[in-house]
Length: 90
Image (cartoon, rainbow, N blue to C red; front, side):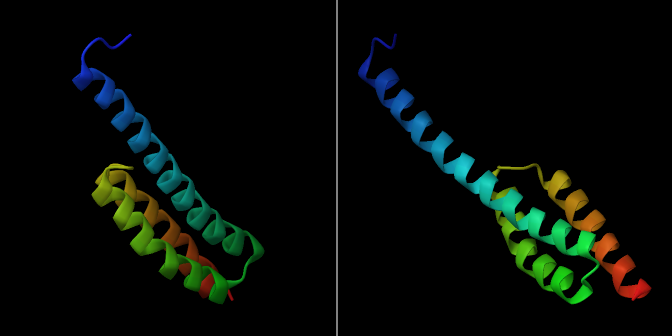
């Protein structure tokens, strides 16, 4: 149990930040899922628009420290390659 006022405040702050970060991570996963769903359906225009919507969200998550910047770059690169592949196939 926290004994000092500073430690109690830190616990409150950590809980608040955890809630915010969880919401951001969930939002990011939703955007990524939209891209993957469009890719699975083979809809290149929907996949491109979903990817375009996902890019700033992923960059924001990397800037806020929700995901590592290299992880964000890797996810973006791989999704972009998959979208290009279905665009070329159709």
